[in-house]
Image 1 (cartoon, one colour):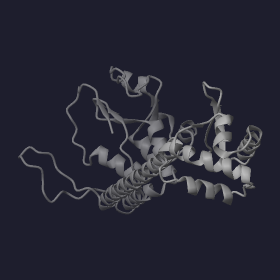
Image 2 (cartoon, one colour):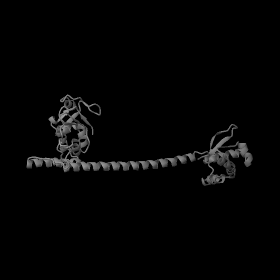
Image 3 (cartoon, helix red, strand yellow):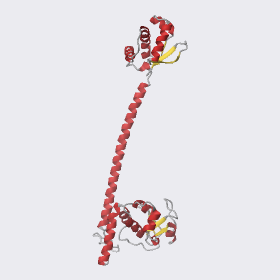
Image 4 (cartoon, helix red, strand yellow):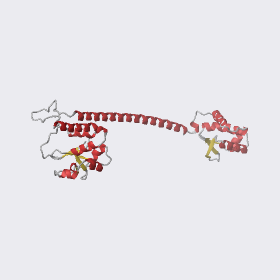
Length: 299
């Protein structure tokens, strides 16, 4: 809640009930206001209507507030030769309502939290009709000083409304804090999951030679489980390449070298390599400077 007090030209008037608490009990919110030198309080109509659940400020004013209780901000301040407050959304064409206009808007709304205040207003009216007047109880502890004004106790209905509003705000704050804690725990779990995924990706990105958990025999067994059609030629070539594939990033041998080591012809080595490549046992990643194909495991 913000307040703009214009320079006083009148003696300050002691109010029986603090206007901030009164408006809070009525609307369920701390709203902006300006206080004129004569003690009148005016409030932005848009703020009040938003807090009370009205969808359209203009329609709410036309339906509930007579012209004498609503004015433009420039008219309200100009009537006392005061300037328009600076900043914070104060515009010269801002529609304002006085305290009676605010009460009329409260009485016309359907917001459940306003019901205690509306009941109190109805009790005030009924009391006046029945007894001719309504007065606040004097406070049990008067203000100090011989010239201090009379202090009045806040009506129980208004006090109860304020207490309920504060309790609601505390519950909302606690719920928000709990949601924030849950959110932080969720973010923590997400971060842990991302770390685990990153670790797995890093492990998968290691060159084949650094994946020490795989041996040549295990690699050959994996190829067999992959329904590789193993002939004598293919097995000889696979057995020769497997140690290099698991221990080095890249295996590169000319056909003639593989042929010499396996006792096969270069043509039979070539056919065996084609079958191993076709079955996805490894993949070719280029050609070396000597023209020999370069192979690496397909991971």
